[in-house]
Length: 194
Image 1 (tube, rainbow, N blue to C red):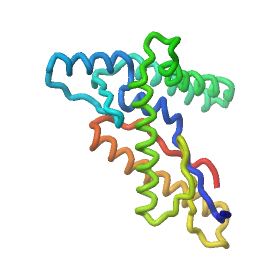
Image 2 (cartoon, rainbow, N blue to C red; image 1 turned 45 degrees about the horizontal axis):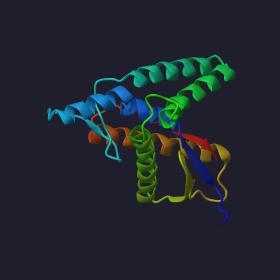
Image 3 (cartoon, one colour; image 1 turned 120 degrees about the vertical axis):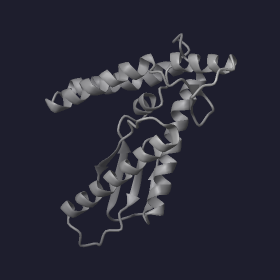
């Protein structure tokens, strides 16, 4: 169908953000499995697919944190090319875990990332529905929402209302992740367009 006043929200660098937030890393995965195998009491992060990760920071989380910082610096000075390069590099950290050519590739790692992505997309959809919004569509990292704004609304008001909703969702998402997984969230939903 056709809908007036639609907001599009998008998770910023979803897969790299999930990897940072939940320490999804080959080393953290191996350490967690070893702890389980040895019967050691462990405080592990469990992904929706059942993969487990040690809480001691892995290698990829540190690399991704540096890429995020460097991308932010590139954006701040208007260097679109550098920003794009860092975006591709961050996404490659996910992609390399899915290719048999990588010695660290593992379906459990990739499944953990996509499982969390699916989980949070559904979580945001359900939260928006609870708040009375109609979610029209969702894909890998974005949701299209019927704003419910009146026909006479001006663009500035529509943008302002979307930004308020986006902040509210991010605050609730951060609390949910901290309370549920005892980690600091690096996930961020962005208002992309109206």
